[in-house]
Image (cartoon, rainbow, N blue to C red; front, side, top):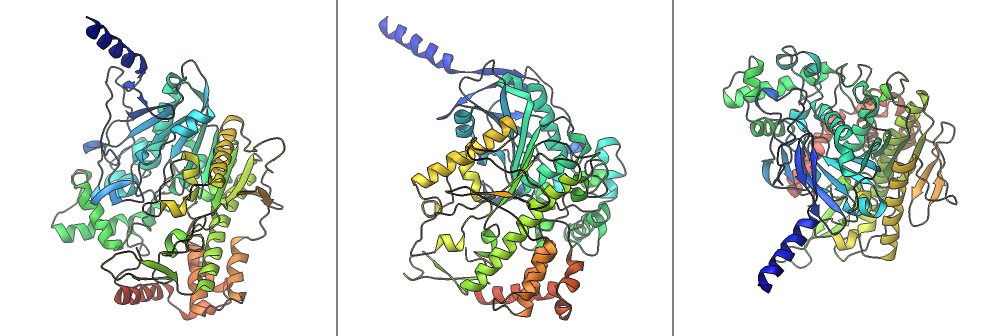
Length: 581
């Protein structure tokens, strides 16, 4: 009898911890974490499969639906440990339009600020499950929403066979952006059930997520869906529909991809139905064959005149009729491009001091001075193009609620196998862990994020700054540490480091690139031209046409695309890979 009573007590205790919430897309039960609660895999739109592929998302409405946790519901993409989605080759599924919600334990009857996370990954990879915002949510009394959205050619795709046969929002080619807008609409309808305030929503994202923040600021379709915005290492690249469809300058245009797919499969694509019948894995494999290594130059965000204005993303930010007059925080990391060039066989070599029988490679910079200058210059160019230029455009629109930062913390540990502070430093995406408190960098985590009082203090600063901004629209840590607003005259920004400090920007892109050619660092003319090319080609619309003037004609001697391919071939022939990893 006593045993039966004990069982009933235990069962009742379990049920009392279960929290259930009813939403427009179903009934969901919370998962209790170390910090607060997580509500998993809520559908915010109908699965974009079959006839709904390459169409605007449709609302998922089924209040009686019992929502269950899912495995591996990331969108279709290439597997990558860096995107947090494991496997080999093409993974994920088209049925991927889900979101997670993090809340404190005592969420009921609250009206907490909502922070809406948009993951990065070049808009070709990534998924919501890689990020755990429970610590930020619980310790700083905010609701955090993390979403999936369609990626790559399933998320951004223009071809007349598709758009010419459709009407309304379906004529857009920015399906991934429309997914984000649909998830924000879902939040407006449902977040009050989780203790969130629908009138205080802050969107924030890193890399492609930061780019998507800028896209939402520029889009006329996202009005009144959010009230503050944070772009971390964002960019403003956008493409014309003509470029996305058939440009001779883009090997990855939709027409080139389909022609190559027809040749490799023997299929014929002559209407929207035959296009929608393509196996999504086959489609992505074909794009990868064309690009050979990555999807970096896919023409994604497009000036369709529906979601993204015809004038382009960057120019639209300066249009007072389009952009939102809301608080915006934007910034980069000090060493943005180390994530790529630090592992490039052009800059770094590896050896096996214990022989290859013990596969522990030692990494060493070939020319530290060359690497440091390349890293500083290209990372500075990212700041100019990804922070200063967008904020200057927002100033043109009449918005004066603007703040800028640069994340500088790089207190990493050296190893016998690599000088991580020199090799990586404050790399692209490095700051995200300080917002989650979840420190992971594969097998080198203990060197990249060493446990220390300094790391703990930086985490507290980052979480407090982001939460303060979500709550008040001002990122200042306290009355004693005031964050200056960004202005055109000196472009002030806060350096986020062990000690906070304010600095200003004196360069624009033209002066930065021109400085490459007057530098006294021992670079060859070709190296200067390649560095300038990267600065003009990446993190914004392609401005390579300005190179002859900025280089005083020095680069006219080279076909830089050919030189890039030549260097890559030489590296492949010598090392068997473009990366030391």
